[in-house]
Image (cartoon, rainbow, N blue to C red; front, side):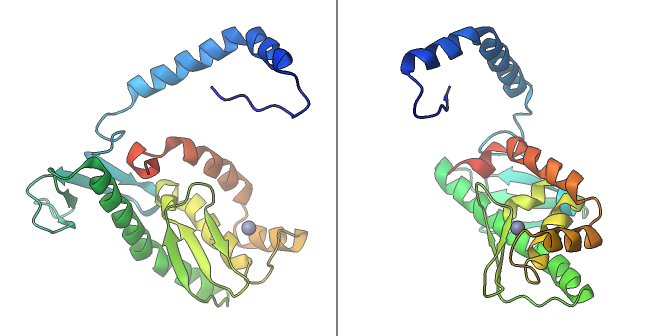
Amino acid sequence: MVVTAPKHLRHSEIDRFVAARKDWIRAVRERLARARAGRDPAIFSLRPARIDLPAVGETWRVVHGQASGELCGQGPDTAELLLQLPANEPIEAVVWQLHGWLKNRARHALTPRIQALAQAHGMTYGRLSFRNQKSRWGSCSSKGNLSLNARLLFCSPEACRYVLIHELVHLEHPNHSPDFWQRVAELCPDYRRHMRELKTVWHRLPDWVTAS
Ligand SMILES: [Zn+2]
């Protein structure tokens, strides 16, 4: 457990604060342990059996082993998306491949969406890049280059669209001024709800996504 406290607090005061809340701490720990136990091991592992990407409505079945060098393709059922990963490589290598795959999926699926939105609203951006970032959903540089977090694929389609709009509106307003938010609201009236969802997505990411 990590306790964050202002600098001027004495250690004894912090200890007293923690001691006074020990029941609450125990309850939270138990709840987290139950949540971990209830997680689907097929998804919540570094070798996932399935990958759901709600933002783009895709479910991938992951096959570990008999790697032919083919990283993705169609399963026997043509509607099934198949991701093939080597079984004999160390887990770090598998996670690294998954991260690369996720960024490619994001590039493939989100590039046409942001292009369509930019075109519809007369916005022009420079370069577009995709990253697997820990703390931000996207950014817009002063030169008009956009960066999007590949983890957006784990949000709802609506929340994902809001982030694309947020970054595009920065091309017109490079700040979070009232004008910026007014323009966001014009293009995405429900944006406050999507912001609330985005805060919770960080805690629901599969383990292989956040592993480094
Ligand atoms: Zn912003």
